[in-house]
Length: 277
Length: 328
Image 1 (cartoon, rainbow over the protein chains, first blue to last red):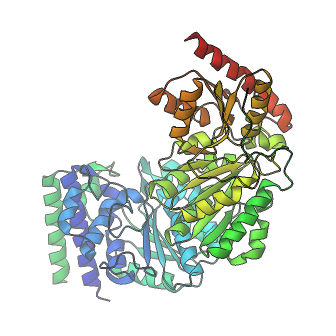
Image 2: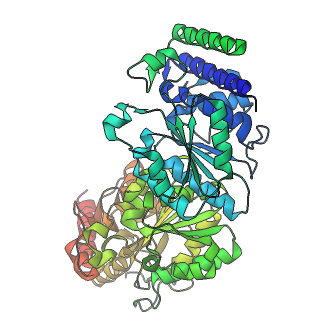
Image 3: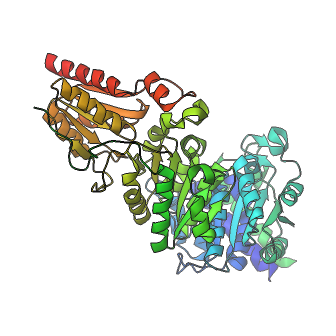
């Protein structure tokens, strides 16, 4: 797998996300930035999906349980060809098809609606169980935030998936260390997520969430695992977007066109340097 | 002269021979033989909910997820997104309150397809007491856009309701007492979701009821008849969408109404009827139901008396509504 191509896709999705949020004027930038690499790897190299047939029955499913990071998912869907990139400019506009939180009834390619944290896990596990009952060989990828792991429902779902040995479930934690109000460790510590997942009967994989190659390898192993799998991604909230990385509060931010332009120039410079290596 | 009950009403009203849960599970099994997508989800109450026979009939289509209402409902929604038709069972308090946001967002908001059965409606929870006695379940479910809310008077409606739910896309909440009800209907009765059954014509006052209160309404109508009052009796088995046409018809014919429910007077059947009246034909109306109270342990009889749910309570409210009308 060409790691450079994967990184290029991630930066492209990142730039599209920043532009869309700047067009809206503000948005959930922090958690959107931290999943750009993940989304690039998933949509570019992992998910068995066909944008020309978004409802294909035995497709892989992706559920973004941290539904507030819709802007990043929309950028990935546009990048993949589910809809025209121009549509990204309508993020959060009146009557938009791209609302702040993911909506399956509005956006082509969104499998299930999310936004109330924790619920995407149960939805995804229901899909995974249903697909297994139908004898399908597909996989269900569920993206949760590390803050979201505080929701009790997440652990109900994890326990059930383990009990049923749903080996078609890959649960990916965007471990960006921060939640809306601050550092997860300060607000209500998640403690050792890997140990918790193991205790619940999941196979656990780790990856540097900034390194597309590592993410790819972890996802491949998770997909092949004989038990439900968790992939813990070591990420940074605001990742790859310096104004967001630097902000004390970056869960959502006001982003103007100037900030976006500067961030995009910086990403382009970074890509050029990557190329030279 | 007061009028008789129509020919769907049993001539002798006695306690049923079959429990509601048994009738329900039989109906679901029969429907599941025709429809391979029907599945059962329980949350460690399959014994209480009476779904065990389904597990024996279709072991691969019955899922007990343990004590996880929030996850169970969410998982049901996910299963419905791949074409299954989940029937989710729990005590009414847990099927509604405990997982309200999941019902709201995972099921209704994204137009998925989950059928929720909440047992032990109101005082039928008897000795399980206040923690297990839902007086607000219909109200909070009624507040969810496009949710259909049903409460059958006895087991006669159950098979027809199950068939309707299985064959209609969308989210449903059906509440009932899981044990033996008073048998109100004979086998001729037909139930159409959203269409009330007029069990007795009348012109003096209309009694609109659901669930166990339909039996009380019939008793009240008999008692009123002895006093020369000709009461109309309506089984409003579908609380949402409420049958506006029948409510307006009753208001036109009688000019006074009583709504009766084994539920809080806030946001249940009484509220639904009042909403129709005040926007169409405001006539004096009284509500029989639980007023600003929590449940407690007791026999059904004791609790009905305590919370003012008896036929005698309906009679006094009926007379009050008539007096208000006559003063107009």
